[in-house]
Every structure is written in structure tokens, then in C-alpha cells.
Length: 278
Ligand code: SF4
Ligand code: SF4
View (tube, protein in one colour):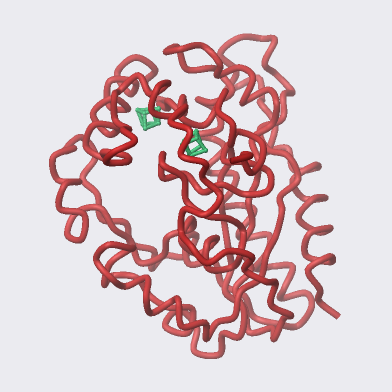
């Protein structure tokens, strides 16, 4: 029988043992980084494929009309499994400088994101072994992400130029993993520093509760992420400016090519490793 616990156990083992979750000699910027782990064991939550919030995500102020609901991805969908993979201490602690991006953060943004695609494929195989179909929209050939890298002004018109047909953070919100913060990261019980993934499945799984009703419920609005942002992209009054963040990250693309990253709004903040106290 497939349960939240059995999914979480399978994911924990894959993340602990996959060589793709560790810095290799080929990718290491310095020899001391070889063998360091990128992600800790994921936390998992389960949403219903017919939750009315999926349709609500098509609103322009959410993901936009390009978004496909779980049943639009897979007609027989019954559940959605969403996970949060926290960055390891190596990744987070190495990114505490005010501006310099840590090696671990750079690996996690590039090779680490490719690893999460493998995690999604692992989940598809794992469900298939249990005799049930599962599909990762993000890892499928039909995933569509509309964003012209380098044209930060285009992000202003979000519904046309910065949207996708599956958004892992919004999926995580629907499934009960956490709520958004001022920095637009999703704050989970393990904090904001990490990445998300998901699969849609035909398995009728027990849905986990969504213990919040407001999209910013877990954010204390302390403003620490705004004070730390080197791109001056976050303000308490207006939240995060995607064009300003994008422009700053593009500078980091030049500094750290072929990798990139920033993440100063996710480290050294009260929501780094948990839900902040108000
Ligand atoms: S640092 Fe403070 S204001 Fe920013 S997202 Fe975290 S809790 Fe919210
Ligand atoms: S990623 Fe960097 S530039 Fe973008 S909002 Fe966070 S701290 Fe600011």
C-alpha cells in the first residue's frame, strides 16, 4: 500500500545514495568540495487532483492561464505528490557572505536542479513498480516555461513572459508544504532554503491537511530578506521585484559562468530552516 511514509522513505534513500546528489571531481571548483552533499532528505505532502485551488492558479496574479491542472496533465490523476528538498548545510552555510555566492549554492542551482529532474523520474519509476502511473510535469517533454533569459523587463508583464504550465512552488502550496514569503520563496517546516518537485499520480492517496488559509501565513514580514538582498529587489511595501532580482542574477551569471545564483534572501534569515516566530 502506498502511503506518505513509504513515499518519504523511498525518496530519502534515493537522495542519500544517488551519486548525482554529491559534488564530483569533474564539477568541483576546489578539491575540498568533492563528495559534499547538495540536498537533505525531502519532506513530502499530498494534494487531491480535484482540489479547486488548481483552477484558481490560472489567475494572472497566480501562475497564469498557461497552467495545466493535474487532470489536464493526466486524465486519470487522483493525487499530486509534492516534495521539498532542503539544501544541505554545505550549500546553505557556504552562502553566508553578503555578496559572493558560495560554491555549494552554484552547484545546487545548476547540477542540483538537474538532479531534481532525476528525483522526479525516480518517483515515476517507483510508482510504476507499485503498479500505478505517475508523471512529473516538470520533467516531461511538454513542460513549458515562458521566460526570455536576459530580458528582465519582460518579467514585468508576468502573464505573458514569466509563466509556466506547471509551477513547483504553487503546487507545493496547494499540497500543504508551506506558504509564500515576502521574498516569494515558499516557507516550509524545514524553511525556505531548498527546491521543490512533484509528480501527478493515478494513485488515490490520502491527502495531507493544508494547515493554512493565507498565502503569506508563515511569513513574519520581518524584512530580513529585504535588508540582505544585494539587488535591492525586495521591499516591505511592495514585496519582490522580479525584474530587479533578474537583473542582479544576470550579473551573477557573468561573474560565475557557466553557473549562476544568489539566494541571499534565503540564508541568514528567520525562515532559513523553519517557520519563523512572529
Ligand atoms: S526573511 Fe522575514 S520577511 Fe523575508 S520571507 Fe523570511 S520571514 Fe518573510
Ligand atoms: S535571489 Fe538575490 S537578488 Fe533575487 S531577491 Fe533573493 S537576494 Fe535579492
